[in-house]
Amino acid sequence: MKNLLLTIVIALTFFTAKATDNERFYKVMGETLSQLGQAKDLTSYQEVANKFERIASSETSEWLPNYYASLTYSLIAMQQKSGSEIDKYLDKADIFIEKLAQQKVSNQDEVEVLKAQIAMMRISVDGQARFMKYGSAFEGAIAKAKSINPENPRAYSLKAQMIFYTPEQFGGGAKNACPEIQKALEKFANFKATSPINPNWGAEQIKEMAKACK
Image (cartoon, rainbow, N blue to C red):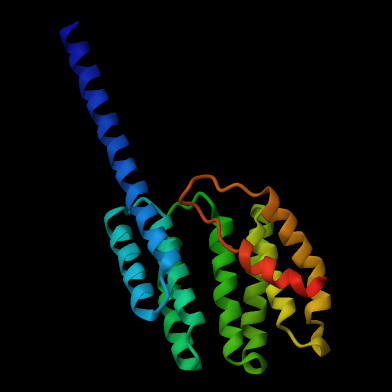
């Protein structure tokens, strides 16, 4: 009986420690995501990226820190004007995509969406020269994301953006993007993130684009 009691105490201590570690992880991730939402310039975005990288280094079994580090660098790239600077930050985003490939990811569709976003931004640097390479990468990632999770609104949102910003003579423009925009809005209306720190971005952007469909 004494040995059994000792085993139970040890087990309870272990699970309590695990729960505490999990709570700490959620807390620091929540704080960092809040900082990401408030970031406005390169310095503040870089601080957030650095923090996600530190979390990823200590929480090696968790995929979300690497995911958000990559996402943050893609957001930094969006703010750059020169192609070389955009590529520089997308290269950093890709480093964390590579790290994600070595991890067990519970929402692989979100990683595919992130790959698509990075590919789309590569195209934005020089559409004529890069569309052949990165266009296929974008389409492949979007198709894979939808096949893994047909309800992921970000897959439809990015596809809508790609069409929206493609010249009309190549099948793009607002009119051609509207059906995909509508799909994205419907998916966002029904979407619920699996946890408070799981990916839940993109709704506001697609709502802004939807104004062109009225």
